[in-house]
Length: 506
Image 1 (cartoon, one colour):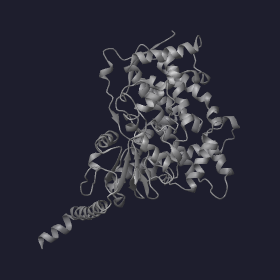
Image 2: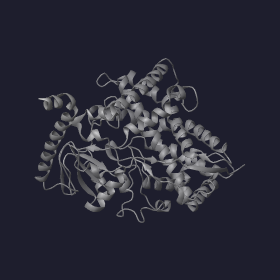
Image 3: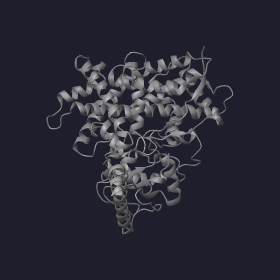
Image 4: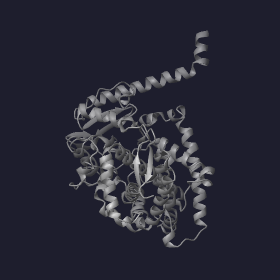
């Protein structure tokens, strides 16, 4: 009796987890038995009970997945917890996923963090494929990110590049944290374009803790969350603390965006001064009754801009400067090009960018080696499809390892070397038509903000190349740089880039 009482009172949590373990084990055995009957799956490593292949992802999944691809081939099957998963790692198979079977694979899995941060996945990136998603994508392409709208923000880009140069110039001859300054530039551009103002210095930035919110936001959204591989055990998000962090961060962003929306609704701006919030509110006002935008929909779309636009811009610029500092002969060649085009002028204009072929090649090479989103946002099959002769059932999660595609020997000679010259005689581009280079994805679910993002990166990099002669701090050699990455939905370097920037023209 005493033993039974002890079990009943003191070991309720223990018994609960034993029950969960047995239930998961039975489900895992059922999954493995079902898989063994399907002989036409892609190859892949053996699985463990319950977790499947989760233990093989490691802390850097893009590297682990590349290693598995080298062993099992460019298309592999993994059982990640409860989720059947297919990973492709070559341009040929990326084309099958993102073009040949684009429609059948156009859905998104409903990730727990995305549900919280994007108002039940009513944004563009994570919204399920269907009428609503087509509606908001059309709004983005025709209203928010069309060529005319992107061009209308050229003054914002130019002003923020000028502020970037001023911040860097003020540091000389001291060592500066360039990563921090580049991150500030990316955030400022997007805040001004989206909200009509920035949060970079004092005031609202300190009151709302905007940068801290963005950092937390990217961390929560990124990576491979354990709970997302066991959707039947949603309580795991509470046990890990993920749910409370999501609730806190989403509440703070919601309060901030509410304040911004109220300010915009109280103002009357002329067309040329409208920011993205103004455009969305106007669309909401004039939208058809058939599928009107709600305020939560607007908030989700705005947050998409930050998720997709700030970290990715910063990461590309940070890696480009890192690679150039590790390859001084490439830096010198890029600077010579920019300075020859500008002549006696000191400011790069957007009209100059089309002449900067080598600088463009530097950016392409950075996209190839360091895609900001190394494993593209996952897709989910809506029906059975055949890929490379293998049957992929409906409800399978599909990952495209863009990092591995960019380093695949089938597509690239000497793939681990930073060689912008490879793009000077090549027509390969990053806009979704050439599957050897897919930093923005491709197909229906490709990023609609490519034109905007590239303009923000190109202008800043060209001006930094022109305005300064760059060196690593005294006593630091390229081999000393820590290039370790922090994996997430976007992937930046763990250590900041510290440099000495000597003004070109004093």
